Amino acid sequence: MTIDLDTKVGDLVLAWPQAMRYLENQGVDYCCGGHRTLREACEVAGRDPLQVLAGVKALEAPVAGVPSPQTWMDASLTELIAHIEATHHAYLRTELPRLDALLEKVLGAHGENHPELDEVFDLFQALSSDLMPHLMKEEQILFPFIRQMDAGHPAEACFASVQSPIRVMESEHEVVGAMLVRLRTCTDGYTVHADGCATFRALYGGLKAMEEDLHLHIYLENQILHPRARMMEAAVQA
Image (cartoon, rainbow, N blue to C red; front, side, top):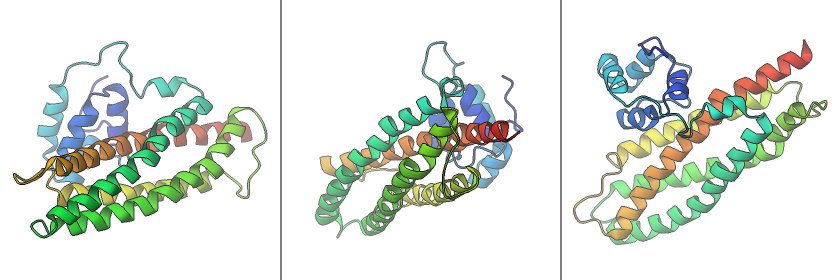
């Protein structure tokens, strides 16, 4: 694949999965903003597009056999949904309570010297409050509808088209993405201060890992599951 400034970021990650971490470190959104060209995504992130492009091209070429989002372009939608639920939804249900407990400890021990932790706390609580009902709406409304279509059965729901819940889910993804940007900013890229204890390091390491998982999670839905579900519905209705 030829990569240039007009390449869509979502397509770039599909072809070069190793670019995910690089783009994250540059603050370039590839999940909610996967529809943007690399030039547009860099401009939104306040990054020099030519420098980012050079960094992408300097990455090692994709290696055959290494897991890639491309895998899910060939799998059934039912298989992709099962992967999202078993991997990303399960991760959040385990990790959010763990991080909440760590944050309580760190805030109690370091809050006086690190007032930014108050903002970290508020952002994390807001993120958790948004994510948990979001997961349930996907599992109880959108995913069953897509599974029915994938199985070749008439999909029954209170909405006329899969477009309706997808629009809601992607709008909520935008909100989560914005909170992740604020969380990264107020933690200075999850940088632990010199006086940070092991619990402090575990918290920021966990928040960074959660950000990475959410970016991939949202990418799989926005850039692969949702477009394929739209295409499937259009083919059925044709």
